[in-house]
Image 1: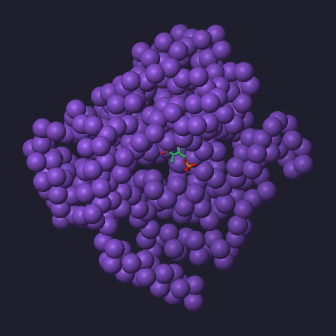
Image 2: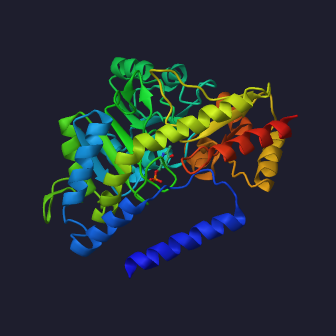
Image 3: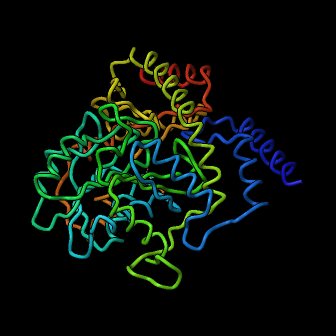
Length: 389
Ligand SMILES: *Cc1c(COP(=O)(O)O)cnc(C)c1O
């Protein structure tokens, strides 16, 4: 019965997609295995565990740590919680400053505010769109406690340079790897060179549990603290030893995550294939700076993001509008740098970030997720080329 209903909903979804035909910028790829894992977990239980450590969560954590090439993974209920817990576990507290890029999703900065610390924005490297190590050095003060780089679009931040800065100034290095499942840096999985890396399993990401998050770390002390923070600071029930929250991942989500993680390599391979096909078409245009990768620094291809060279914001927005009219779900990430948003503008006195400002006006992303077919990639590429003429 449940299975029939699920099939019906899935059928309806595919039908609706056919009617509207828009190729979305990202969408989850859920198969029969995930449906079975959910059914099994719902019928057998448990649905959750009082300390957040049910059998499916523990299994997912073991798999995830192995995938990330580190000792520990701690599963939580979303990527924002992962960031907040990691900052707290690394010792960030009231009065501290944390350096973040402004060219990111707002959650990166939000997690710093919820840890009680002050957000300090640094500019980006215009080549990679990730935080500029040189600019990070410009804003370090006696209050700086951590650096929080973002692997934007699924391309890792310059972790080697950032690690050197962190070492020199005795700072924690926490990586926002929410978009980087499957990316590598110097041949290692994203997150490997950070004290802790934070991942999101939101429905748009390379793998998903609907909502969900994970923190990976090699540091035993950070791991121990993360487990406490995830569950109200409780080691045993009703004895709280430090300030925490309810960041527990439900068992159903972990059951989906176990299956999705196994499929990640095939998802990323299809993304890469789509990206390479798109690059072949788009390199005929002089107007676009295209994303690249190397053998050692591999993209997760979460977003295939191009820059309109010497383009204005109006020109970029017009292209987006025209692509949408042609059923291509292109989007600009991110149109508003976080330091320009009301709360952050009022509370954190940011200096000018010229490269961030420029990128926010010139970039846009095209769909390359595993549900996009080779024919659709051809259509996306050729449509965009025509618009640029
Ligand atoms: C998605 C995302 C987050 C937040 O993850 P949620 O699971 O949605 O809370 C944080 N940072 C970046 C860069 C993201 O893309």
